[in-house]
Length: 89
View 1 (tube, helix red, strand yellow):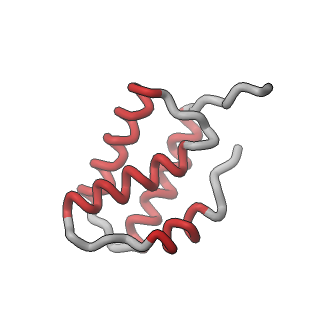
View 2 (cartoon, one colour):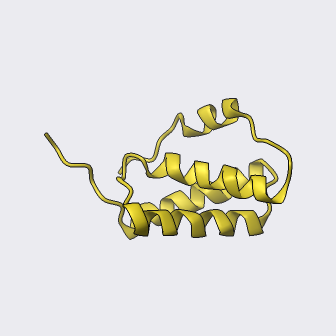
C-alpha cells in the first residue's frame, strides 16, 4: 500500500494561488483569505495533511474563515465545482 505523499512548499504555493482566485471570484475578503491560510497552516502542523487531501482542507478553511466574517454561506455546489480540478503534481 502506497503511503500518502506529503505537502511541500510548491504544493502550498499552488494551493494558496488557487484559494486567492476562489476568494476573488466569490468576493471573499483578503482578511478571510489570510485567516484561512493561517488555519490551514496550523492544521497541517498539528495533524499533518496528505497532498491528496490538501485542496479539500484548504477550501474548508476558506469556507470557515468566510463564515467568521459574514453570515453569507457559500454553496456546497460551488465547492463541488471548484474542487473538480483537484491539485495534482
